[in-house]
Amino acid sequence: MFESNDLNFKWDGNFSNGEPAPVGIYVWKLVVGDHTDLRERHEETGKVSLMR
Image (cartoon, rainbow, N blue to C red):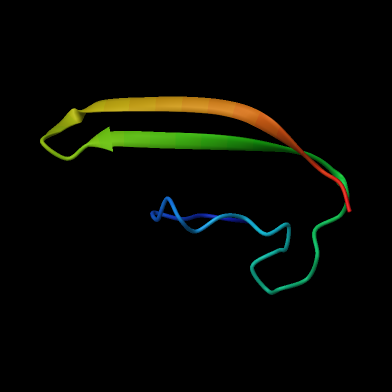
């Protein structure tokens, strides 16, 4: 649905084809890795409510 490697590129509430996503609660997952130690990896999850 949405993926980015750029901290400044944010989800605008639309699907990748530009169609608006329905109002609702969406789960997100953040995966962060250490480029100097590939074994070092952190994951966080949460929820966001989309309201229009």
